[in-house]
Amino acid sequence: MKPFTFGLDPSSREPFDQSHVCQVPHTSGIYLIYDLAGPIYAGRSGVDIQRRLNSHFVGSSNKNITLARRVGAGESLTFTYCCLPPSTSRG
Image 1 (tube, rainbow, N blue to C red):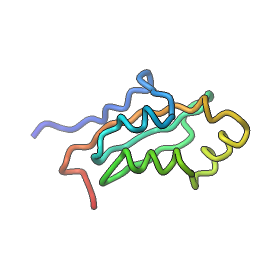
Image 2: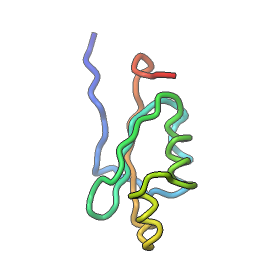
Image 3: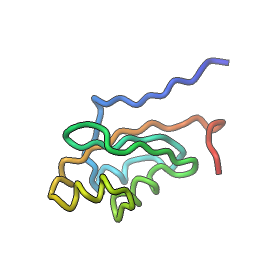
Image 4: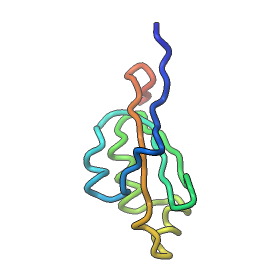
């Protein structure tokens, strides 16, 4: 069996906005959310990565994402993600 390597590519970041989050597939995956200084949140969804990213976008319980929005830096947030193979998913 071929080993799996994660494909998070920081150079392929997308703006962290509704239109880009809606393009993420409904599958398991890992993701990073960045501000201008670098990564501020790393997460994993075992079921639906789009739903998880959307929950951060709509009303985050993460203090770094909330703070970025509160100080007016929300528009500078970006994200990248990769989908996980089915065998690594969890329910």
